[in-house]
Length: 336
Image (cartoon, rainbow, N blue to C red; front, side, top):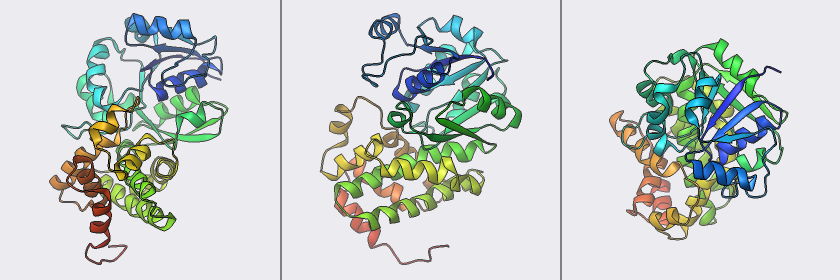
């Protein structure tokens, strides 16, 4: 196994999971906390009791807030922070990211105001870094299953195949199989838009609409993901792989999905502010949905599920009204 120094930026559920499963393999991994207080609390507890209670840190896992030292020595920098704070976090480390380091983005989402993908933001904020060594990690990766040692697969996307193969070698573990892909746009769009469809699936679950309705949502949701992605320059084949349909099925089907949980609560009539207030983790689909609708209008794309979800999030429609509107849309060909 290739030995490398891995810095994980972000003590989120996913960031902590990636740090733990790689440290379990004996790799040189450092989990970077935002503050000295947070780093001290994590070290003292020996676990991330906020997001992964009961999951003890491996002895090999280093924890610090000394980001300058860690990043300057890291061969691989893995960023796992919410999309809403992705740019803010990047500005704190942009000047110290070495040109030789490979950056892996483990954040799924779109920037709310600009609609930009995370790799686009990184290339803006870290202008000295080569686009060819920026990777995106995405796939059917429910953290609570992976941390328990259950098997899963994911995708590393990079425009430079030699870089993605290097990351594949560094990050592979006994229970996380990694595939490579050159289509960064497709992988990022898949990972972002599937969260919107997962909210729709959660609404379906909350309204007890049945398996036929959910299957229809997932399938037509995939059409919307593909429509948006190809309009932005993605390879259509990506959407039929792990980062596309694979991630979509996992997120729409599992009660572990935060976005699915949001949909269930919306179906019960709860306001989005109330839902956010009761969630410890970030549900990326909320802000991403708004960005998707904005982009689809700019591109003149038909995204009826995304638009319906957005109307429920904003409170313009009740969940049951949104479902009725979708069912009463004009008839059309499935393939067209």
